[in-house]
Image 1: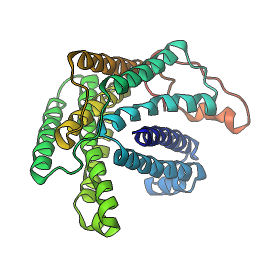
Image 2 (image 1 turned 120 degrees about the vertical axis):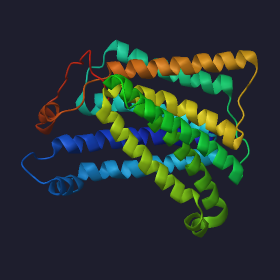
Image 3 (image 1 turned 30 degrees about the vertical axis):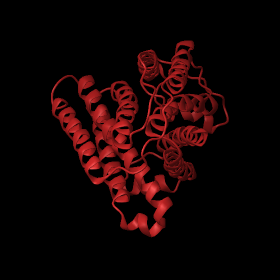
Length: 308
């Protein structure tokens, strides 16, 4: 279990590094009237963007290792630490002055996560689910996604963004389950077994679908709504999927259940607080002093809604 926790933390850190570096590359890109393809080529040529891409590969690798060594109910909640790592990188790279309430939100996330892992004490269950279990679980989660997308057709921008974020989270919880299965196939059957088996292609399909839904969530409304919903629903959907599909075990006594619910509520509260109170999105104007070797300390905005 220790290995799972370590690799999950490394995955969250790597994803934060990737997000910040690639965002730096985007805002650093020379502006001008260029085609989309030319702009993309210029972006890929930037060392900062390439370094971010390497961290993105590391994110997937660390997550796969974490899921091999531990249950979904442990790994997926830990990935929310990406928010805190991103905040730290903002301090390190942009010398941001982070408000006390923002750090309080980060501490709330850490305490909620730690309390859940201690109280619920998730443990590995059955390694291999049969075809019937996979079909039943994926069908139920697919119906949940369809229902969320149906409700997301109408309403305020914040409501639509939140529902799209929830749909993305459900898809990514299924993707994590497929990753776990794919790593098991690789460990037992080798690369050839991985290439000839279904889990690898299921990972690709759900990964693409999740990315598309994420972009729809960003376009639908405020980032705070989609980000908070995504980061809250993903662990919950993953925990449920781990129990249903892999028979992962959690402490189930009344006191344990109450403690786990309270812990997850604290984690969710911290995510919402941090999504709302995070520093503003990085812009080219923010980065200009850094290019000239100057220290820049932008003030936090009360309506900021992104850590990247």
